[in-house]
Length: 261
Image 1 (spheres, rainbow, N blue to C red):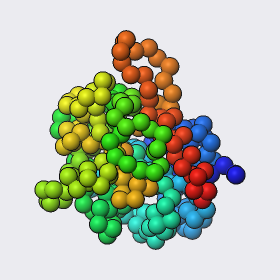
Image 2: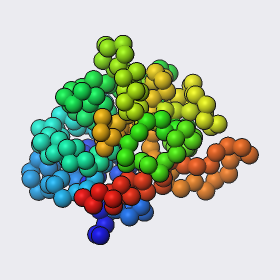
Image 3: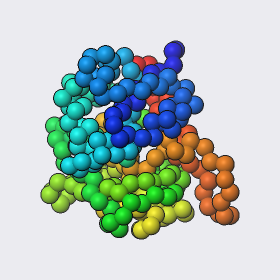
Image 4: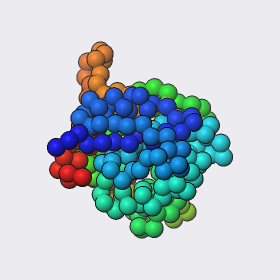
């Protein structure tokens, strides 16, 4: 099988593209940068890619609110292509600003299948930009991440000012997401126990760090697995040294191989 191709979408203000490029490449993918204007001008198509990745950063300066301009342009130029991508079971991954974009598009959590905007990413409870290492544990279900162990803490960097999950007014909405397995990742303490600040850097209810759509092939994640593909440092005795990066991207690769898109 040829290397599965992944489209790394970008525009003015995105960053972490290079880290994502190397993470995908090291896990066996063939990554390609695609600027939003290439979709606008029809110089590129998303059709032949196996995966779409929306990186972090501050797209369009995060004017209006984080991710809103990038999501509006994507919706205008490629909405039907993206919806077809989801319907075919192909992965769409959004990290940090990418998570915010997917939420704006209504692609996550999409609990009722209507792709309506039901969650947002509000300013951190600390009212400051939070940038450091944290831990997450997988608590949901998705066919794309079968090799990531549930409830094991994985080290991963965070770097955001707007990462606090806010939801529709339905008071049971988060409970419904939890029951459907769509709360993919939660922040944790280094020992895997439930986290409060600072290990939960933004104050999200339930320590939510990542959500998926109902079918599990669209994932939004606030932490940055692409920034810690491997870890070579030293940690105090008893602290888990597993990192999310390689595990995350290798799992995506194996999912693609089995699906053979």
